[in-house]
Image (cartoon, rainbow, N blue to C red; front, side, top):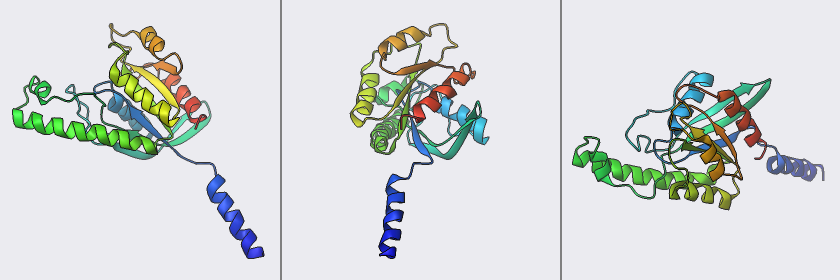
Length: 211
């Protein structure tokens, strides 16, 4: 009887134990600044950047992640697995890469890898506890890509934080992003300059409580 009781306690501990670390995914369209944001977070708290950035779309074509990133803010600590995903697009055309002076063969390969990256990003949604949706605040947020991303998250009941990046630029329109996502917390930042990161970290802590 004692053996059974001990076994039952262990099983209860496995099934009902609170997760010590969450998986936090960074999703959004290409060139919104997901990797730039991930790099700044990783640089600030681990001393190492996560990935390469470029002005050419789909620079990130494979899911990349950093285990056990711990941030501290106002005497609070949060440890999570940071997952940076390839940009999601409804269409990938190799000719668009050729406009950036890329040779045809290279452009075709990049388009193929970008398409595979999109599929990989969507598959990884099943492993996400919470998601930061990064959008470019200088571009109209009412896009099919953004609607598709948020729709997938809602269907999976994954907690969402919307980050409006590039608020350091003149064309930035934070109010338009807020209007596009009225049901979600929206925070404006500049991953490039670090502007408004205190509010961002506060929002991440709030997001973690919804997991």
